[in-house]
Length: 466
Image 1 (cartoon, one colour):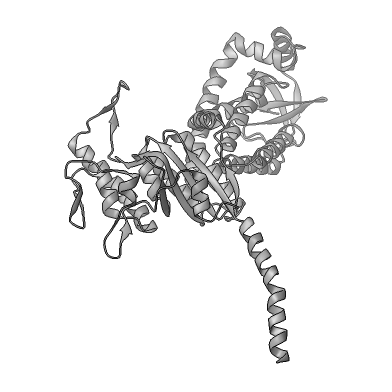
Image 2 (tube, one colour):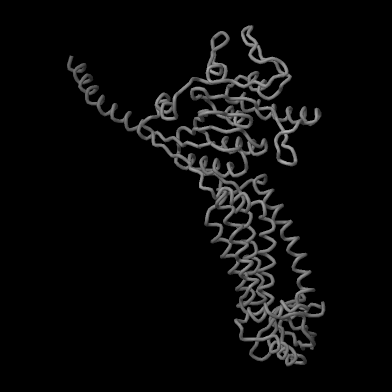
């Protein structure tokens, strides 16, 4: 008897705590809401990426797409579907008013679909806009068949994964598909299926199952209440407007890299610090800004890039010929440029995989090739123009004019000094107390070798071994 009394008292003591613990656990639920309120275009990718990364970071329980869209680009939709797949919690779409075309694709990429009163979903057949922007135009039959086949495969994968009715989804895409359920023709051949909220939630089959939507709810708040999430902490991702800026920046990112590389190269070939260096630094800054706004990288990679740049500058101006510092700096800068465009999610391995870095590496490779061509052209053309004189004058803070620079060049001709670094063919040479940029006529000259100035190419003294 005493044993039963002890057990009963223990249960009474535990029950309030258990109830409080359950309430506390419920209060700790987290929901991230992603508003899909515009056409599905590249700026939306950055908004969705920002929301998914926040959901992963905050360990959210549910991710909700609050959708009201006419649709958009299929390629962008595929990218967004891949981003949504990074979130491992529950995913819900609330069709607030309409989910046409690509909006329907995104809806079936979530596990559950709910709809507002008088909302619609469907009409997902591919279309092509006319070149003059006046509206959609008819696709050629072969093109339409090819696009429809590809889209069906993409959407079918999402529908199968999330348990949606594949026949319904295909009838929204392919007008050759007739949809008949329980003897009722819901969509005739030659038509594109579009469902109202009432049609989408109607149950068919044995056992009965909703056609597409799990129910009609008045608002997002009611949906969260119905799902037991009314007490959950809610994070709503608001569009900032800079997503459009990020789209433009990332489109021209190879050009920005070319400008940045060429600017830094020209700065190292001219005395002081002037316009080329400012342009190069600004180009790199805008490049990193694009990655940051797009949600691809954090500010830490800007710091890494600056560290690499400082190492290269130390190699050139403090320890010329050491090579190691320059190689380390170049490697650090390259890593920062690549990682600024790699999409890494919270909790994922810090080391990116090869598929993740393929596109950034290709962009950087083409940018370096382009910058090399630009630098070569500028090295031939710029010294012959008056612009070079102004660059050199501005770089030296106005203290040296073109005439003075020409006098200095003439004074150096015939001077004998010693190579400070290996000349391959460029490097550093010491003449008295001055260490200057020198270049041989093609031969390799070891450090400590006697050299004589025989002319100038731009800001570099041309030397020969003595």
